Length: 427
Image (cartoon, rainbow, N blue to C red; front, side, top):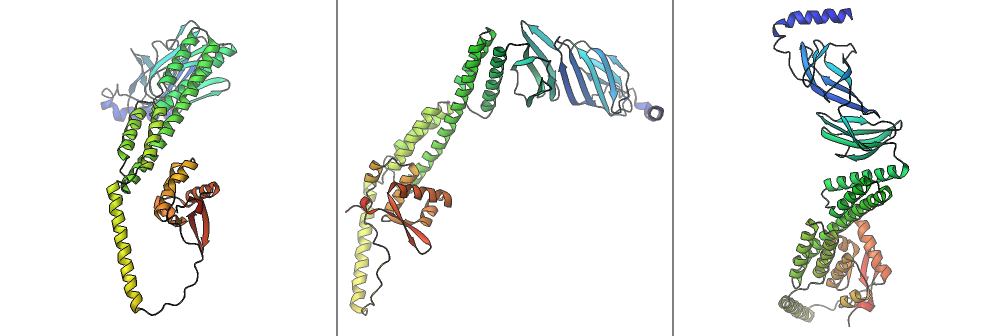
């Protein structure tokens, strides 16, 4: 202690010319803890960083009256202080940290059975509530909430905050309070992620109103239903978002393949789905997105394009036949070739019959369209490449079509040939 005082004295002599100028410098908050007691008194422990070269600093405190105040430095030595309008001035020369502890009764207020703790803080703080207290409401989502030794322990962000609590609740009242707090935390967290939960929030407000009317059982039920409604709304939103992505991909694929007949209706349905989603009507958005995907999947190429493709195919066939016949007149007799290891591919796939008979997923239909475009068969690797599918996803999709009896799998060397079964061939 004597050594410390000598050091402080020496430092004061060296810095004497600047002492008056540095008297009112601010401090930097480090930590803040509140312990609330059942009679409304609050113990405050506030630690700040201070410049050890300053003779004295002002520390703004919480509440309007203080008792049993003690100020210590980082080594635990007590420091002198004097009261100001908003806190204290501490004789802090040589101290790098100051810890101020005191009691105040001006941070809590009680209305009926409900207590309210109100404070504005410059740093994240912890609040410990009294024995037997049950939290009724919070002004903000806590960064942490738990019980320690049977006491509620809440960590709150910096800023203006309020905690509402009651002491000595009967069981049903405690259950209602816990259900309301749980629903409020869940709804606020999901709303922060962008979900629109209007109906769930209205139901939560109804639960809070019932609680204030002391209808605790009804309040508990209403709060539990509010959380369930919020959870189902979030699930509906996620489903609508996924369906929207599938519809967008189906429309792009149809346009890339030239299937533009009926595509405008699909695009209109997708636009409606997007608007409904933005408004929070997630179930309706999911239905419209599904309709958009189905319309895109059933879209067709324009008839004039089909005619053009037919002419091109016929011309190519005629040209190929002419070349073949010309070569046949001059070429020697070819040697006999071995019989094919697999039967010839079907001429055409009856997609309409398959789609009418089976309730297929969108991706199943798209793979069958691809097989039809390739005269009813394709290697599994080609299916994966065409739709950019992981190997496991493609394998499950093909297994599903095999189980349904729509396709068969033929091994050719190290590859799997996927072929539409003969019963779904035309002609």
